[in-house]
Length: 366
Image (cartoon, rainbow, N blue to C red; front, side):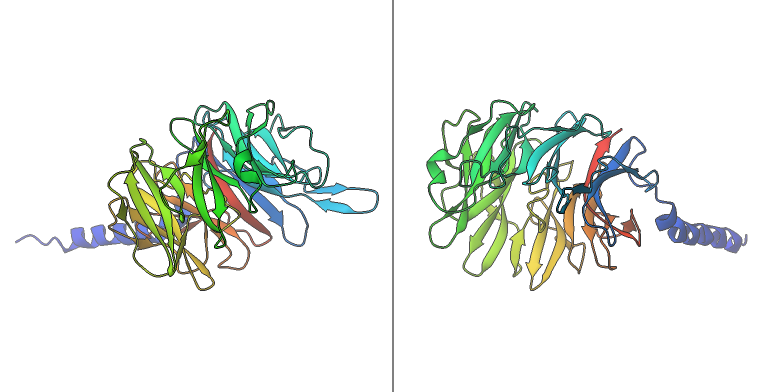
């Protein structure tokens, strides 16, 4: 009888070594992708947009304007709500580069920075939360340029801006875009009644056919699956909120989550408030807010396999090209950007710095 103990020992050693080296050698998604993110140096006011390779190397400051010096004060610049155009080559972002936040654009390599929300000079006329249309021809955003919070749409070059929420603007509350439907309608949220619960509305880019998306107040935050066949959304109740899903035609409504707590899709300034579906359309990422924690979860589209990815607060930053989940968290002190498998395994710190905060990650092709 042959002795195979040496073979078993060799196999075991190979497995142990692969596990020990996985976190240290994991290159992240394929090399043709890189990561854009917002960086804040410790002890320095203001932010900048950086890029780095998928393995965390090659950090580069793309905006180089974290502070604007005026005669009597210094303005700490912010960069928020980064959104990638459908062509993958341009981003739109909200920034306070010239005072009150405006919508800006630039190529993913940092070139061609330009202001898109043109004609805004007064401190009370601010612009927030840019979201690209599916065809890349328009951008929806929230603005206070008329003295109230309105949803606007403009052409991709910043021209032809127009109000598409005007029938609801006279009511108090903050109207803000939540995405686009596959057929090119703008989806936005409007607080309704004394409860302030959100109701989702849709409207064409020319401002016509404004109507509620759902048949009840408290249904909001819709997001269409990659193939457009299903819509995931949040339903509020007196005891909290739950994740629901339905067919795109409004039929076959079913509840996905039943655990207590408030369900939200993003805990950080509406960042990545849609595009929560995994690239293959099988899973949905969401945040369960329990007490002071914003725990990151992933659930299958059929309601099974609800996995808690973090037991600490995290901000969902989108799905990586290889199907892993990207998030930021300050669980170790300063904010870092992480990757994790959808089953909760293989946690990887991509930035792992001790002198800066990194948040709002966005994967782009080179």
